[in-house]
Length: 214
Image 1: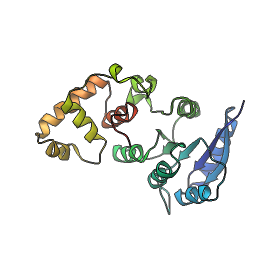
Image 2: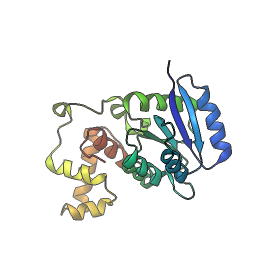
Image 3: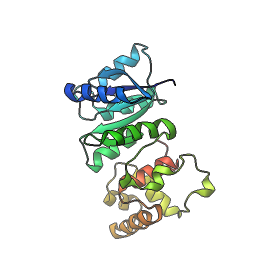
Image 4: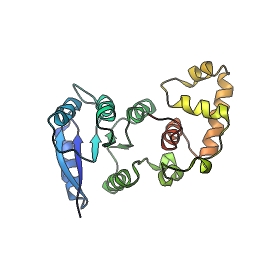
């Protein structure tokens, strides 16, 4: 069986080396390289080195952080899948990584079995998000036919598209010429319809169903 090549990008040497050892134990995966920051990512690909299928990307790094590096990869190597692996758990950071093109987001305190599952999911389906997003999003195909998509009203679609932006809910209300309370009602209605529990869930649904193309 041909192995799936991976690059690890993390500026903490002890962690990156430990991660290298762990991933190297997974039967299907091979670590091509361990890099320390986004600038090294750009340099690596600028030198026509062998390309991986997946990059495990930290976020807080010197010279060029993970968000910037992921955006560069989306613009220059869109076929490579980025899986974020970070200590950052706040919604704003996660949303920035998703908008930059990350295909999944993991926290560094996960069990090795979850990491292996995530790598397999990203390889086979192109996405992986943890259970707090919902089983529907984890199991659904990113290429559903439009008639099978959950029916949303025009204003709900407008709101959903705006959730992928960097606007706050209050700013979304201003753009839609609605009160913050009405926007809150749209949000809660979509949480129920799409079976998600957070803005991150809304964003992932919009990306996977190609309602928004990043």
